[in-house]
Length: 326
Ligand code: ADP
Ligand code: TRP
Image 1: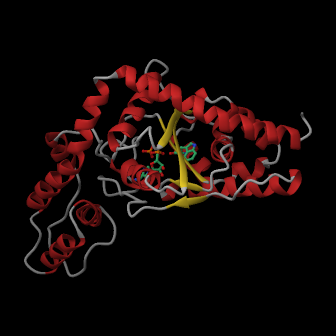
Image 2 (image 1 turned 120 degrees about the vertical axis):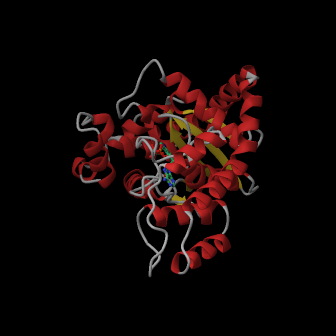
Image 3 (image 1 turned 60 degrees about the horizontal axis):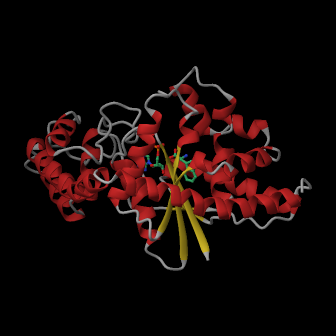
């Protein structure tokens, strides 16, 4: 059976970008019975940028709760925490022997992160994509539901798979991204993508209606009329949200208004906030149930690690043999 692997770093609560770009893809693939799905919290990757060690465990737990609340189902998917499957780090080291330093240094995602955190130029950050390749390939996963910003990392995973297959005659698949309609959710600030690390850019899955309204209120707009529908910036992004959370018809209606009598942004934002909250409410209710049953969540995480370690251990043994270590 083909396998699917995905993960999210534990840098804070999940937002609409994580949900539409990654989690919805995870949910869709979990329902297919020709696929085995494994979903993790990438806590080791969290250490590649500044983090608070007193908050880490809590943040990891929150991602697990967000996963379960969003509908990841332990009966259908293996849900686990990356650092609890130490085989990933061992395979990561083996993989690092076939990756050139120059390739890693020129990766756009590495350069972006350095720009964002100038003091984070560590070997761990440089190695980020190699560990990610190990996460995926230790399960020989061929499908990876993630947002479009992760594509350069998947390219590295494919290169590592090819190299390993060539040199050591392994049979790693070349993993491809599973894209969703929301593969790029824009920022509420009108610039770039929605991201946890940009204040004012996001709406969290756990936000209540008032908070959603407040966050939308901060999104930049214009006079509401014009000769051409804006393609970038605050208004373009708001229209994209209307399309994602209401529907394309609604978007078209607003576009017509823009070209004629004008959009009233207070109304657009009010309606949009309601539409977003309506989608989030069932997730929030489910989250409460899991929060009230910490033992069940502990059990899911423990069982997930056990299941993942079985597969990971087999792959690691095979690779160590092929590389001449065993
Ligand atoms: P962030 O940029 O907020 O820190 P992460 O890098 O932790 O988010 O991303 C976790 C997952 O969510 C990845 O699969 C990523 O591609 C996806 N994702 C993050 N932001 C967005 C977005 N704005 N649109 C679509 N997908 C996104
Ligand atoms: N790099 C991913 C992100 O920022 C997280 C991640 C780590 C991941 N390992 C992975 C995603 C393996 C998919 C598969 O969100």
